[in-house]
Every structure is written in C-alpha cells, then in structure tokens.
Amino acid sequence: MNQHRFESKQIELESADDLFKAGKFNEAENLYIKILNEDPSNLIAITRLGHIALLANRLDDAQKWLTEAIRLKPDDPDPKSLLAEAFYRRDEFQQAAPLLHTIGREAKARKLESFKDVSPYQIEGKAEVTNLKFVITDPLPVVQVRVNNSELVNFLIDTGGAEVIIDTEFAREIGAIQFGSVMGTFAGGKQASFQCGRVDSLTLGDFTIKNVPVDIMDVRRFRLGEMQPDGIIGTALLYHFLATLNYVEGQLTLRRRTEENLRQVEREAREQNAKIIPFWMAGDHYMVAWGTANNSQPMLFFVDTGLAGGGFTCPESTLREAGIKLQEERARDGLGGGGMVRSIPFIVDTLTLDDATEHNIQGFYLGDDIEHRHGFRIGGIISHTFFRHYLLTFDFTGMRFFLKRQT
Image (cartoon, rainbow, N blue to C red):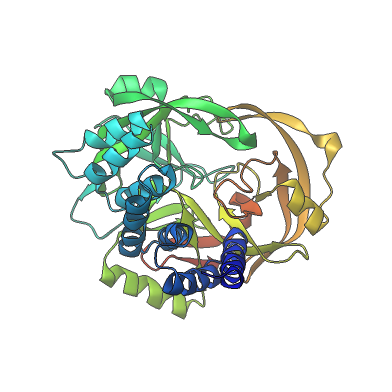
C-alpha cells in the first residue's frame, strides 16, 4: 500500500472512531464496513462492528464479527468481553463462561457455569401478563416478590442495576448460592465489592422465574423513607419480558416476550400516540437514547430509573454545555452503592429524551463516573422524576422505548 493510500485509510479509520465515540453508531458502522471492503483484516473495524452490533442487540452479527476479531488477535480481552456479553444476553451461559475465565472474571464465570444442567430465567405460569402494584412509587417504585418461596419481600425497581440484587442478610436467610466476589462501580465513581450468586426461583405476580442469577450486597441500608428494600429488580430481569413501568397508576406490568404481545403493545402505542424512542444497550444494562439538556446539542443519556428523588445527573461537561448552575449551598452527603457520595442539587429548565420533553427537573451532580466508561460519550443519566408522569415500556426485541405521558 503506497503512502498516500495508507494515510487515506488512517483518516477514514479515525473518522469512523470519532463517530463511534460521539455515539453516532449507524454512521460509524457504514464507514467501518467501507474500510473492511478494502482491508478485510482490519482488526479495529471488525471489533467495532461487533461492538456496534451488540449495542443494537443484533446478536448473530455481534457473534460473527467478534469471533473473527478473536481469531485475528487471540490475546485481546476486549472482543472476548463483548462476545461473552452476546452469549449472556441469549442466556447461553456455558458459552459465555469460558470467555469470562480467559479475561479474569472468575466469580461470574463460576456463576454462569453453575447453570450447566438448567435453563436460566425459565418463566413458569399460565398467564401471558401480570401486574404488580407498587407498594410505594416515590422516591423509587417498590414491588413485592418472593424469592425461593420466601414470604413477600420488598424489591425496588432500578434499571441502573443489571442482574437482580438481593440483600446480603436476606441471601443467607433464603440459602442463595454464592460463587465469589467482584468489584463494582457505583454512584460517584465509588467502588465496592459484591457477591455473585443464584437463587432457585423468583415469583413476581403470576410468574415464577426459575434459576435466576443474582448479585448479593447490602441492600437493606438503602432506606426509602420508612421502607427497607430486600432487593432490586434490574434490567437483566426486565430484558426477559415486555415490561412497563406505569408510574401514574403505580404498577409494573410484565408480558411474555412473544410476537403477539409485541404487536399488541405496538398497536396500543399507536392508538395512544405514545412516543417510540430507539435505544442502544452497552454492557448488560446501559440503555442509551438521544436527548438534550436545556439548549445543549443532542447527546446520549443513560436511562437509569434508580436516581431516588431526581430526574437527571450528568458530568461537568454537560453542566457547562447546558448552562446548569449547581446549588452548592444545598450540597449534602448521601449513601450510594459504593459508600457516601457528595450530592449537589441543580434544576434543568428543559430536559428531553428524543421528543419527550419535561421542564424544571430536579437533578443532582454526583461526579464524573460514566461519561466515557463504554468508549463513547454518555452525556448524563435520565431518571425517576422525568418519567413520573409516564408509562415506560421496554422492547428489547425492537430496541425501543414506548413512552406515553398521562395527563
């Protein structure tokens, strides 16, 4: 390859990478494909195409590209981590586990290996749909569930979490199996360890889900007023359903992920003029969609419903771009998953998610811990009080939110 052509290819690759880092995944994908047409063994382009396919939940494409990336560079941990996630989303735990072993994630690998003779997330019950009333809605919604045939216990709903999380003491009470600890990153960038585990069953309304992977940590310390939660329902469980958080009527609706149920949800969305918002998903729960804060340029927001009493948090770069002023005199320390976190309030005059718009949203500055964690910029977290007047439905088949405001 002559020097001019080499430089031209480098410019194309840098342009594609810049698009990826800006969250413009469709445009980046087209450019990476163009690069591969002329350089079929370009490892960066192949790995990025696998990553973009995973973000779009196109798992067959992700497997194809990432398998090729591993073949080209067997010692690179990044495509192995991404491919493990593709298998994990399919509940193909026995294919994910060896990849996790090779990149040093031993506890999670052991957890997934333990499902060798059973199907994870096996949904039992005759119902197509079940509704769970919120015990409380604010500062976060809480529903009652049973774990391993326990008495009814309180689980809050938080899409900022991945797998179901159960309290450490409660885990001992119900005999949850444990496989070792890992480090996690929580609000404010604080790190803390938690245990990888599994439970035999989780009952939510008319559904009993058998063979459920869980994480185990001290949940009961997160008091919601007088409410003491025993666990958390995160995105990985909701992923197995067509799930609706109905903040207005105060209930969680779980539908089986069937074509018929999806058609019904789509029909209802059209009839009710619900907003249909595309999203991407990084890792095992980072759902991101385009939005704006005040007069900012569009940026990707992580839909994390677990910011108690707030609707938005963001890094300093977004504060500057949106012209948001921190209320330093009202700063306080609060309890996060990794310990105490300094929280500084602010108000967002106008906050959007796609074309859904809310005004005067309470926000909290917690520090810069998520902006570049996934290789592309996340401009903020959009959360509870933004959605407080909505029905929010998650469609992981079409990678869409259905968002209907109730007046």
